[in-house]
Image (cartoon, rainbow, N blue to C red):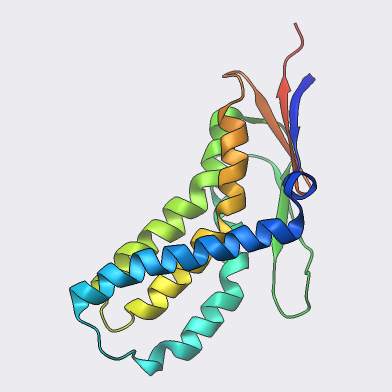
Length: 180
């Protein structure tokens, strides 16, 4: 296998810049989602009963996001190694790596899974639940910001040749081609 491209977002953009752009995307997503929802539901007051579940959901969101990346790999019966490496002692964060190379299609499915399994249901639930739509939209906007780095990886992987294989390491993705 020959390495066609190696993508390491932290080295390319820097961790602080990635966090800043993710934050700005979250704020923009909240504004873009909340304004139409508040007009549609004619909200005047936020239901305060949803604050504690909202805080719990925000704290668990990184772990749930990582689980949504892992779920398609489990459904495809891919051999993966899951490990727990907390950045802080309070928040559970799971990391994973595949024991074999993934195809381009499997890699794109894995990268886009949190968007389809968390963001889209979050948007639809916020419009279906007028009492808690503020919290649901806030949680969805935070998740949209979290998926920014996923979409950067998708942009790199989607430009790879059709028969490419993807190998995931710690914060790095290698796009590989078979040697002729």
